[in-house]
Structure formats: C-alpha cells, structure tokens
Length: 162
Image 1 (spheres, one colour):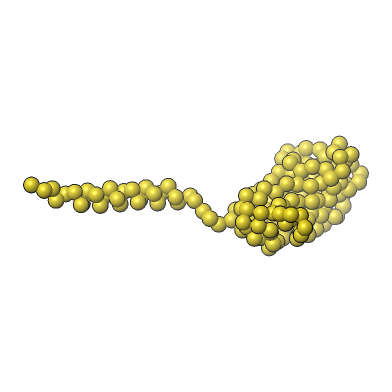
Image 2 (cartoon, helix red, strand yellow):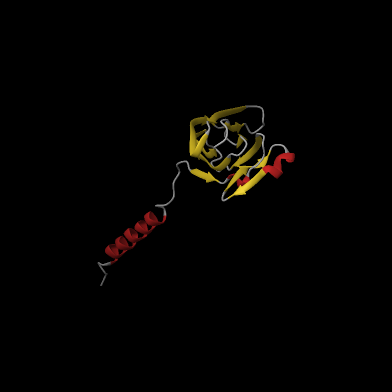
C-alpha cells in the first residue's frame, strides 16, 4: 500500500527550508553603506606637526598656534561603487574660522581625481558640515584631507558609499 502523506510532508519540508533561507538572507543588503570614523586614524601631512595633534576622547585637538594639515583614510569597501552619497565632518573651532576638509576620489591609476570641499566657520559648540554626491572611481581610492585651525578639535567624519 502506497503512502499518500509523502507529497504533503515533502511540501512542508520545502516550505520550512525556504522560510529558513528567507530568514538567513534578511540581513543581506546590496545597497551602499556609511561609516563614521574617528580622526585618531588620521596622519599629519607634515611629520613635524605630529607633536601638535593631541588625542581628545575619540577625536584630536590642534594644540599649536598655527594651522595643521592632516590626511585621513576612508575605507572603500564597495569596490564597484560610482559615487559617495553623503560626507560630513564634526568639529569644534572656538578661536578661528577655516576648518576645511576635502574628500578626494582617486582613479585606480592615479591619473584622475574628483573632490568635494567642506568649509567650517568659527564655532564654540560642535558643528557638523556636510556635502553630497561625489563621483567615485570603480576600483579607486578615497581619502579626506583637512586643515585644522589653532585650538580646534576634530571629532568625527562620515562617508556613505553608493
């Protein structure tokens, strides 16, 4: 005598397997992503200025009487991405205006670049300046280059990839 329960049982197992697959893939996304970085990973453009970058929490402070120059890494983990949707930096500059950052996108062979300029005015409380839509080169690299006024603090920067 043949069992008539086999197709129903197989169907229940198949539904359970597909449901489990759906749950496991729910967190997978193909959209872009954003990251917030601490400027503690930044390096002085001029090594002689390193002594004036003072760690302050997760940020850095310019403890000199002159403007300091620094370069900051940006992880490009969406290799084929074609643009950055959003860029920001958070700073405090109670003494002077001129907290400036440029986000650079460099082609894989270094023969082309695009950038987005962000300027910050004098501020006695933390301020965030933003920019949007910077073209990025597939397979290229990204970095942030900033100028810090005397007495300023660089708290964080953020980059959202497409």
